[in-house]
Amino acid sequence: MTGGHEVRILRAGDRAALAWKNGGGVTREIAAWPQGAGLADFDWRISLAEVAADGPFSAFPGVDRTLTLAEGAGMDLTVAGTRRLVDERFAPREFPGDAPTDCLLLDGPVVNFNVMYRRDRVRAQTAVVRGTLALTAQPGETLLVVALRGPAELEAAAAFDTGAGAGTAAAGAEPVELGPYDAVRITGAGARVLHTPGHAAVVRLAARSGR
Image 1: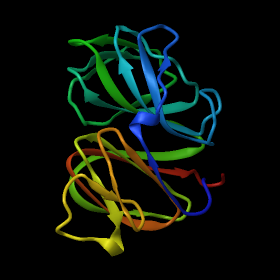
Image 2: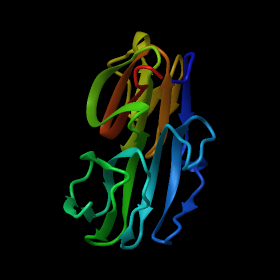
Image 3: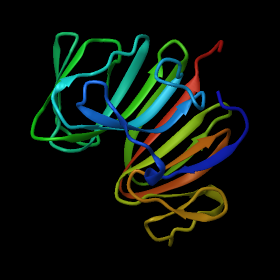
């Protein structure tokens, strides 16, 4: 999907806010593939959405979506006529991005972590984790780790140190600070160790067979 091995730090402060067409909020893109792809031609797109008002979600034909509530009381969604209550933080919810979806905020604005991917091109898995665990990227895969709440620490497995303090990430050989909503994108094969006293999202992406 991406070719070669790369570890890239994606800072929350570097993201531009893109206003929704309906004025109900803004979106900040974390990463997308192909790089530079727009809303009409991405294979996958990962973002943070700040929802400030009730209203419909945009439709994305051929796209599946995994939505995780990161801040706020939640939303009362109606997806293709079926009610889907999203009121638990850090619990990924999957639904089709091309189904008509209306949103009612439960108690004020929310921030959602969004993973969108074209179902005929990409396999995507999203998990929200805490504690310490090993992550292994297979050849051709992309791993994206996002600190949703509090700091996170990501380091090369060979450099694993059980005494490392929270709030430091080692992406490769050198430690790098990861604050809230900072991300690390890993492409190609490799092993990392993730420490997170708060909550971190781990997204695993790969092209479907035959692509």
